[in-house]
Amino acid sequence: MKPTENFFWGNSVSSMQTEGGWDEGGKSLSVYDIREASEFASDWHYANDNFHHFDEDLDYIKDLGMNMYRFQISWSRVVKDGDGAFNEEGIAYYERLIDGLLTRGIEPMICLYHFDMPLRLAEKYNGLMSKEVLHAFVRYGKEMIDRFAEKVKYWIVFNEQNLYHVSEAFKISGYLKGERSIDDLYKILHNVMTAHARIANYIHETTDAKIGGMLAYSEVYPATSNPKDILAARKWDEFVNYTLLDAYTKGVYSHEMMTFVKNNQIDMGILPGELEDIGRQKNDFLSFSYYASTTINAEKIPVGTPPNFFLDYAKEDNPNIGTTEWNWQIDPLGFRDVLNKMYQRYRLPVFPIENGIGVQEEWNGINPIQDDYRIDYHRDHLKAMYDAMFIDGVDVIGYLGWGLIDILSSQGDMRKRYGLVYVNRTNHDLLDMKRVPKKSYDWFKQVIATNGESIYSKGE
Image (tube, rainbow, N blue to C red; front, top):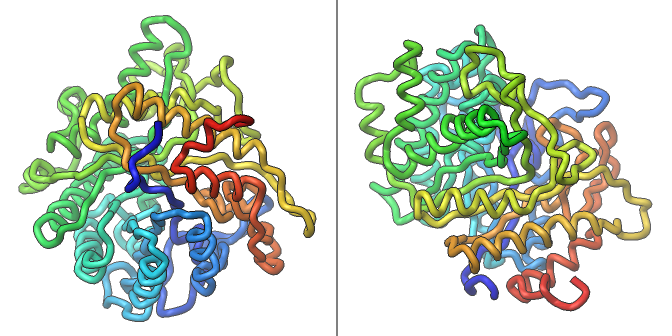
């Protein structure tokens, strides 16, 4: 059993965790550029300096045999302050990056937004709470499609869009002021979905490129067989995951969620034409990140809590599975289940475009890091994916790991490393940023060379 020959093997990154070059090339400020370093977090000024040295990283991607690279365009790099003039110098950087991928036989995938709101739009309009920011984002997205869709055939609008359905939305949407109310949350999630739909519609109206919605899909199990736990887990899936998948595939939000909106008189800020835009959208595939699973204990949920906030109170560790040092619980069977929930219910091809394990690692300056734990993690998740494909019948496009050349973590912590390639820097010392392949590099190279067959070979 193995994937088809056109299966995508690749790597995913975001701009602020990778690029550096924070004040170069005409780039304006994002909300990340002003965040200061702390004990366990770097500033965001240099990352792994991909802005200056992406050729070396792309050579590693090619050497691994990967045929796809998902990167993010920094809105602040290509549009002054998010709604001003287009910055040709910044656009030229991405042109060079795309050409560098294509000359190496690597398919580019573009993500348009990965949490780094232009600072001015956050300060003036409160980010994606605002229709002005919605319009500015769609303007930016359409311009990037006009510039790059002839060369780039795979697109994502928002990274992990379901995070705008939970309290994390207030951290990633440019929201700087407010009471973090349920009304504000639903205004944000609706503006985000409207933006996604308008970009998807534009891509299909003007190009032959493909676009897919993306979720951060962490399996959430009931903590016990108590029916209340089972109900809470189901409601979480409905309000956080299925409502987006319904919108991507059917053009409507979850009926249960909208009944909740009506019963609680929630103001989503819906303007004429927006629901029609959502209804017209077409997505070519469904994509997601997957790292871990958890459980939910309904007894911990305060009375009257909206389902969107359940895990703020009721998350519990699962005693049946292991965990990382960051307490992300390792669950390959959850990965298989998510693949099935997305495909069997919606019957669009699915695409896991982030997966991996973050671990603290230090290089001794001589020997490659012996990261057998990373090999184990990827092997077990790949086997789970193959079971979903060949036993359950799930149509899977490819498999993209996250940050397979070390980058800053989502919290800016260089200690949490996902890579097959070590980058020699710490949170507070850039050192020489030398790239050093780990043991997992050669293992993954063999997996790709055999199109996955090597994970079933003797000794694996």
